[in-house]
Image 1 (cartoon, rainbow, N blue to C red):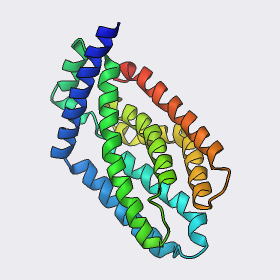
Image 2: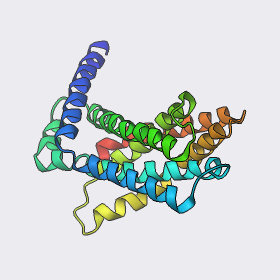
Image 3: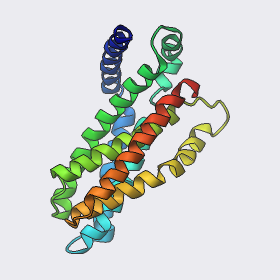
Length: 224
């Protein structure tokens, strides 16, 4: 079993490297997600005038709304190129375990999304004059990103040939993310307010993230 695990781990690392290179070459989804995030953040800053005491009340919802829809844009076509080129079918009939394929793709999406999100935190720090790039908030963003990216990557693996299938799947995925997003918003709010009750929300967020990642990993072999 240890030898099998070692082989799958080595293959997973190579797949992760290949997925990162593919994401770097095909920047369409990531540029779309990044431009949406920047535009949305600027619009929120002018629309709500988030200054003074209001910023700590409204900013958590603003941040996670931008993060969520940026993630949907970025991961919506995760498996499209692999499916069109026959790479996904080749991987599935190879000795590589389906979970290894999914985990490598999800990790690549997480790393790319975290780059966008951390850049947004730096930008929001400047726009709203509120220190957001701090260790506790970075931990919350990282945990929440793992949770929603796990489900959104699974959604992108589902192949629907029917009309509007690509539009329907994000809508169906959103209700599954509601508990995770509530925990993420509450944890972020408690962190900005510097309350002592941050730990329970982080724990709840972690539990939802573990649940999302586990369910998505187990369901990936049945996705296509």
